[in-house]
Image (tube, rainbow, N blue to C red; front, side, top):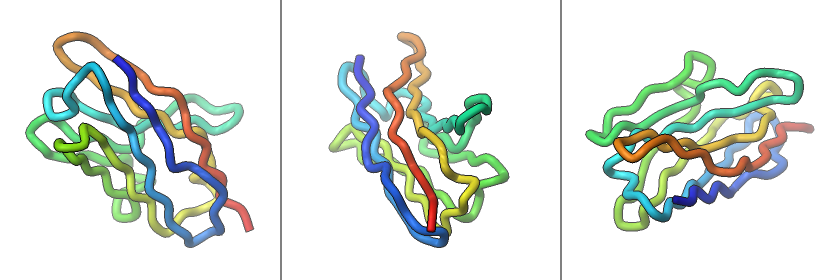
Length: 114
């Protein structure tokens, strides 16, 4: 199982980015797919999730600004991030939870800076 996260980068406050998490070895439609983030010196925290049935959930800090979605045909999960703030700076990780186990991808760095 591999989860390949990409799409991070440097963006100004108020800007947008879209992260992707391409899965292999599992079907994203059968797993709860989540995004987490970890800023330097802080614990990894939950950002957003999409369950197998398609419902979504968000951390209060990102609700209304971030959108999690998936493309089953591409076996990929996305995190659209709008109105980015300095405090969104972190390494972002995707996570899959399902019957076969729990899997983490490598991080993709998002830096919000002027």
